[in-house]
Length: 260
Image (cartoon, rainbow, N blue to C red; front, side, top):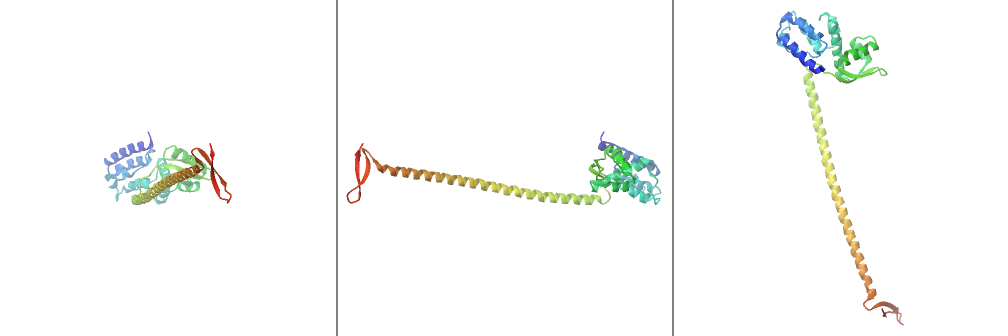
């Protein structure tokens, strides 16, 4: 079963469970969801009315945990968690949050330097980082890429998407609108170039036709001239004899006939 199908089934399961629970009963469910190794999307669970009702109550900390896994990173947890605003995370939750951190970094940059990754993931050496990327990210199917030890970076080829953060939808719509506008302008430019190319093609065809017609006219003209020249030579021959010329005593040419 692929990652997407697992996501769909798990989301459906946790949404149904959350819809049937209230207050403190949601705490173990949220812990289970954020620890599950195959679940990386939490916005649907966050939108369940029973979960939203935790806001402002003594159990609101569990809502904060769910929001952290939906939109936050390991660095966010270290800042907030160290201040005592979030409960201690179990190892499975720590692993999940670090995986989600890699996905967040991959959203904005397809070449992730090792130094940046080690800082964001709280990893002490390159070997530990590469083991994490291979075993916990690529084998899990949430990212694909190339480890470049020479350049000390991870080249991202694919990364699963995370839940949209508040306000991110508007930016995404604007980005898509700008892309659509740019695509329309590009398409218009291509159509104009095609139209110009068609026009030039027609002009070339017309020019070729004009040249061919001109060549035919020249051929006809040359043929007619050759025919006229040929007929002009006929004056040298008459029926019954061959014409020849000689000069008379006054130096003027006179014609005489030779019998054939």
